[in-house]
Structure formats: C-alpha cells, structure tokens
Length: 59
Image 1 (tube, rainbow, N blue to C red):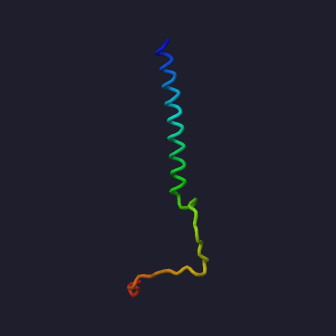
Image 2: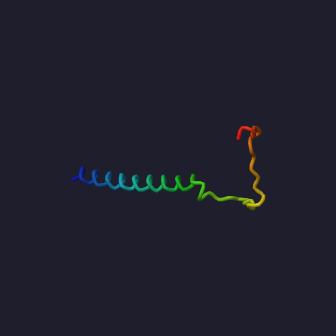
Image 3: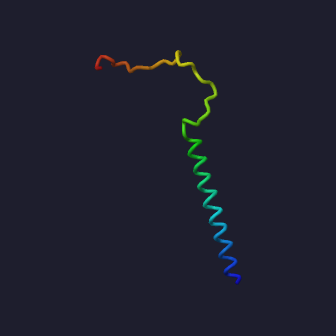
C-alpha cells in the first residue's frame, strides 16, 4: 500500500513538473519573440534612416 501511495505521489509531481515546465517554455518563447517585446521609446516612421553600403556602384 505504501508503494502505491508513493507511486501516485510521484505521478502527481511528474504531472505538475511537466505542466510548469511547458508553461515556463511558453512564457520564455513569448518573451523572446520581438513581436511581443515592449518598445520603450518608439520612433516615428518618418525619421527612420536607412544606412546603405558605400559600394553602391555595383548595384
């Protein structure tokens, strides 16, 4: 009976660990995704400059 209780307890901890690990991976993936990243100081679109390489003659 004691082994059955230990087995059920281990299964419960394994299920909890699996849920917490998958939830943590999901949160980490969203935090690394640039679409969800917070921008502190957004720049207006008119002021964005594009830096071109110096050797434009080859284009």
